[in-house]
Structures are given as C-alpha cells and as structure tokens.
Image (cartoon, rainbow, N blue to C red; front, side, top):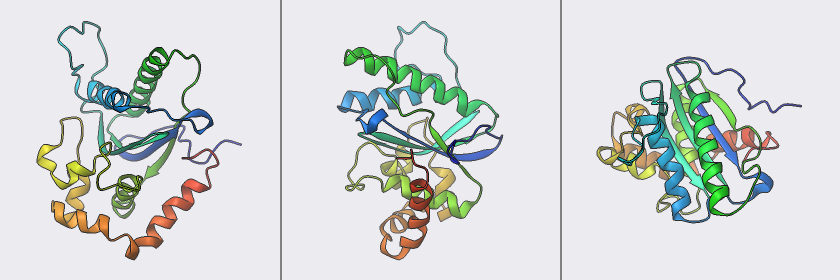
Length: 210
C-alpha cells in the first residue's frame, strides 16, 4: 500500500516538506565532502551557478520556480522545506539532485545501485502554523542541533549571511523578521512537545519515513 506521504502531484504556489533516507537505513553522507556536494547541487539548480567556470554543460536553472526555505542533512537522511511556483519544479529539482548525488556517491565509493530508500516522501504544508513548526522540526533533527553544521539554522540566526539558494525570510516573517524570536521558538522545546509530537507521529505512521 502506498505511503500517505508520497505526494503524486505537486501544486503551484504551495509548501512541501520532503525527506528521504538511505536504503536499508545506511549512511548517505560519510564525510564533509559528501555534505558539500549535496548542498552544491542545491545551489546549482536553485541559482543556475555550477560553482565552476569550466562547467560547460547546460542544466536547468530553477530559480524563481522553487525556493528552499530550510534544510537539514543527517548522516543517513535529509529534510528539505520547499516552496514552488510552478507545478513540476520540485519534481525537476529532486530528480536532478538525487540523480547527481547518487552518481557522485557511487563513483566515489565504488558501488552500484540504489542509494536512497525509494521515492522521497513529501508532506503538503498548507498553514502558517504548520510551516514554522515544521521548520523547527527540521532544524532540531540533530541532537546537537545548535552546533550541527549541515542545517539552515545558522542562517535563521543571521539571515544576512544566507546564500542565494536559501530563503529563510519566508519563515522569519512569521516572527516579524526577528531572528531572536525564532531562536526562542527553537529553544522552547519543552513547552512545545505537543506540536512536535504531532509532527513525529505523522512521520512515524509512514513506515518508510526517516
């Protein structure tokens, strides 16, 4: 039976939480370079910048069609919070990122075959109240989330340092563009267990969720 969190058709002007993990729960990021390559692929397709002047192959520039609001990369899975303005932008983005990363990973580690566990999962975010709670869930994935280097939390604390391929302002606007207020929201874990439990329950009821 298909998972309820597999979105088969993405809609225009909507928010989505995407996540996936390694096949057999294996690690998909083994060192700093792996994280850097995955984030570099996000940059490439969200800005049209390949990061090298010698890159001569044409590739899709999806800036203006899809925006990355938050992310967290963990050793065996990833979370992305995305907003798209065109119906197939997320599909295009994920196809290119996953394909590119699997090719890189398999070549680097001399392996073949599937790396991720089937199709990525996607949850439709249809309310502001859910939007800022899911951003917190994403940012608090790591036990040491305040110091975890592979999440967008640092750019919520200092949005002026956010790269062009990340847009934390959408969520920060829910906090009157006050990074300090968002930090307090993040730290307010004990008083927000109920909301976080709802998110975890939804993911737990997807048998293949991270």
